Amino acid sequence: MAVKTILQFGDNILKRSSRRVEKIDEELLALAKDLKDTLHNSTGIGLAAPQIGVLKKVIFIDLKNQTEPILLINPKIIKKIGKEDSIEGCLSYPGYEGIVVRPKKVIVSGKSSEWEDVEYTAEGLLAKAFCHEIDHLNGILYTDKAKKLYKIQEEE
Image (cartoon, rainbow, N blue to C red):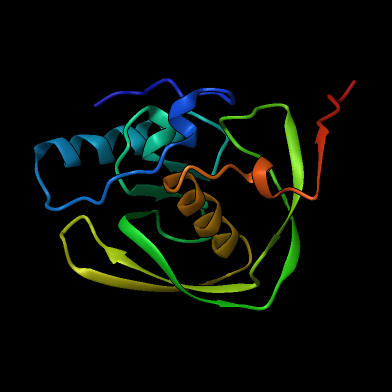
């Protein structure tokens, strides 16, 4: 499909809640491809549909060589285990990072691109990515949860 523009911090769409997806159709398959193409054209590891202006509960995560890419429809965190500080950034807020408290481990459920029920048990970076992207679906940015925000200093 296409590489889409990633909405930036301050855009009101990023603060809105997304709608549940009720079925797989051509529009949803196109959205999945757009999320994949847009993420792969960036430096990020995850992207939520609202970040490209679509208020639907769909996320795409690709930790590159660490796991297979994950497209998840109507994702929901069903269990959180532990807590730890995490350094996070966001494609919608380039040039900044923040310290956010996230679960060490999560169990996430949702639908696959074949409309099958799926469940993931994730820890580390994948757990953080699930939490970050699912927050986007609820109009929550990492900046809303950050204990501290700072501008990334460019290498000289």
